[in-house]
Length: 476
Image 1 (cartoon, rainbow, N blue to C red):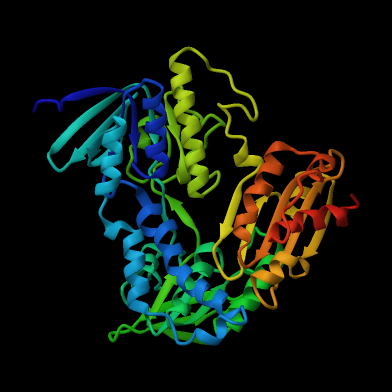
Image 2 (tube, one colour):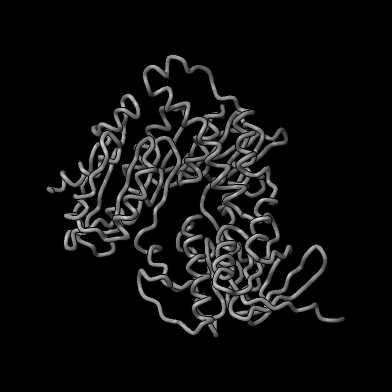
């Protein structure tokens, strides 16, 4: 049997999601050649089953709630959402699950797309099983794994056999289940609970921990739980699912530890993620298939001799967020190009070190209320050995917030390194707070001294005036 043909590129990327696309783009911009290998849709999870369709599902309900929160508008807003219109709009934001536009973008940049399943087959080599047969790609400089992650299904008796929804089903379904049970009170669980509740589902959220949104400031989960309960969502914390069964009619029964059960038409598993690395040839480089890929701050995979293997996005388990994966990818492409020219050094906060993954990860939970945060929480800062001062402020007391919605309810927290007098973390909870987040991110990344930050005068009357109030509460 003859060997498959070998095609040479400077960089070969396995996975054409947001991270993979950005690595290849940066490499090509720097004068290298690049190919991406993709077995599904170009554009990845975010474009078709996560960021875009999920936010498209959430936004109509939020817009309706916001109109009802303002006198003069609420009097003329009546009736529920137009469900078919919401789903049609969602489908549009998911490009109707077709990747023509993404492929055209790849073509315009000079990146070569290779359809098929890619696996490491040796040092700097990737074997591809494609629709037209097998081929081999050889990378002159680097191979990058950017295959993302899948929804994890916990080992609850009968759960896997019950054909549960995962995030993919929850963001793409054309059917509104009359009753929905959500296992998990993290970001995906809370967002999808609110989305499907707004479309008419009766939703119950079951969270094993003692609060929603673990990892965020405790008040964020508490405020969100209260808002969800007010919207008719049954939130149960400190509760575990013991067994799940789907009967012949399609109904699902969830038996709870400690007694009691729930019945529903669908069950959504939102209990974390697992790396999509089970079949990418990790055994070829001495790594465990199905494992997360540890990397250094240049995205180089640890423990692989020769320094030719990189991993960006969810697979390295540093920050499972699309924007962080793209940040890593831009940096990784630049690193590969720089090393091709002979530069190998990097330092914190320079163009070749993903420092923000440790110190300044911004995230937004697009629920009602929104939860926006960056950097440390009070707890994580103290665990890191940072002596902190913590300042809270009621967002409802800010003029811009009271104009935004009648009876506005929200809260802001600023976490300050007491020794250096710089902001190391911030959390905002309330309607419309996602747009406050980048200012906080700039403050954290820039390590702006509080005395200088005080001169960044917020416009009046905007919700951003909370920055002035936080600094005044700190004593400036």
